[in-house]
Image (cartoon, rainbow, N blue to C red; front, side):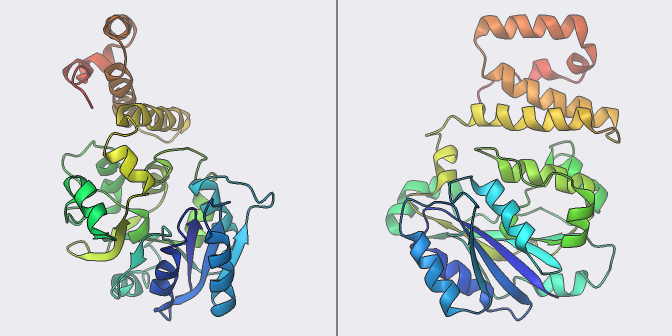
Length: 310
């Protein structure tokens, strides 16, 4: 295996060295690509030092050297990757020694296009633990049991009961499958760009379970995590989810191979979040419109969930 590890770097000068060195411990890793995204801290200099210190570390920026966000930065990393497999790592997270134990075996089967595993939690300080333990606790982010690849897309999009989640840090993708089956990689979304990408990835590629009952990578939690602002409702999560599901809805209804029942479910999810975030009068107006023009959505039960807070 020749693995390219793609690491977007923004405001992570304190953590990126640990991320890089956690990836370099594997002989299967042929390169670590750092995409410095006009970070406001000293991450640019740290990236330069790491690239000088380690032969496998590549350091790049966007052509205009401006900030473009995590999604476009990952796209730039993929564009510059030379490995046969792509993995991702956030600059404040890190890999564990068992990161590629399952992948080395599973990818011997050419039908396997992606492998996912479990993600643990590491608190960088007692202050961070005190602030965010109620959000993350010591939970393992994982898919709860082994599923056939055809069940992954319905599971991630909440069509199949309690499924669990796939995270980028615990995902490995066959690059040839990614580039041949997905015309659009990460979209330039401010929030949930990874979730939107994973929805589409699980639809187009055959994703298989790796190690699910223990972590193969760790989420680093500190006071400056962007995701913690959402999880702790500093940023209203219902608004960001409306934007996410609107994006998924637009994609699903343009995808000619998408099953009709999948489209209806995705539309229901989008409208549920949109209505939940609307004023009372707008809720009534929207529900009346759906009752008159979109009975399929009503019959699927949108009225049962759109009044509770998210």
